[in-house]
Image 1 (cartoon, rainbow, N blue to C red):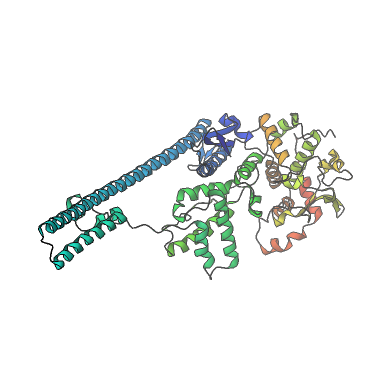
Image 2: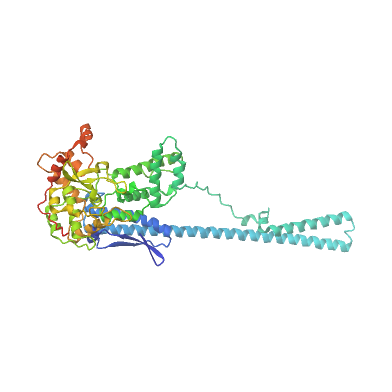
Length: 540
């Protein structure tokens, strides 16, 4: 975000709680050294993308370029590089501004010099004309005295010459220095050589205009393709402004790529009216899933296709959106919980004052014994607890009166309630007159339900000394890992169905008969989850 301190704007970025011990800071403050808000916003966008990349590196403690471990000192060096790069940008901007000012001053000076030459030529020409007029008048007067003008024809000729000179002087003073262009007005030795006019390059259209000129006018593209391309362009404009096409370079394309990888996954599903900086910060703070490599690649493919059109129309010179790596196998750096970490979690007192110990324990245990996502748990309603084939289940499903929906089509599913949860008292959370199972949680005006819990859980696990690689979402990895390592006869299809994953088997049989998995099979899968060290008090 931007903060105006005195006459200059500063970039301010909150450091995620889990990463603060690594940087020794709660937030980053970087002076942008400008009072121009438009310039400050562009610099802030670039810094936001670079700090987001730094946070991702800090979470994995791995250099993404060389794929090797890094230390805390390396992280601080990367942060200092961001500061240094910003200072270089400021120096370049100031240098360019100084050069432009010199050019403007030189141009103004040359203009004044040319005006002075024209004025001098005007004075010289007018002085000569006045002198000739004066000589004619003197000669005429002498002729009249001596009687040489008795001839009417001679008198008329001299009078005509005087009138001609008079008219010339009148016109001279009416038009001013413009008459300095008259032949002989300026001596050749003093004339300035007119510089050859510099051919001006055609003005580069702005991105939205280029979109209209190129892709949207292409009849070979489908309406769906045009619509998706327009959405991608709108997202870029929201981040960097409606830039001229020629100013969009590979550096800006890289910053846009970093920004896309930092956006929460739900952002792509909405109308994109939320603040980009706030959404990226929310994703970092609450460890929300971000846009996949496939989604980012699709954005770049649309822009690359648009640029190919612009190159053919000679609106752009080269394509900054091609030849990028999207690492489609890359996932958020999370891992499963160990038994020692679960023991530490169980033995530590919950410290949040706005969310009770009971709600903390209930949400955490549901995640640990079902593998459900935080959003799925926090959006459970009392009516979503039903018996299916005689087995108590959580029904993960969309509701017409709610904007929240499961992450994928496979996310709509029935999850049998683990016997440990039933014995612990999870059904005691159902209260008459309440809509949600965990009714204590507040539904925010923006963002997903449960963000307050996610933030407090992140602070809590950092406070008790758990590593950054462990997050609430790690419970889902833990369930998946433990089920797939079972020595029993659990089938992959059952595990995928329980967790709401797309089937890992792509055979026709798996696709056709996935819906035929019985609730008993899912119950058997759920009950296979066991923890020797997870004990959380309810304290309802």
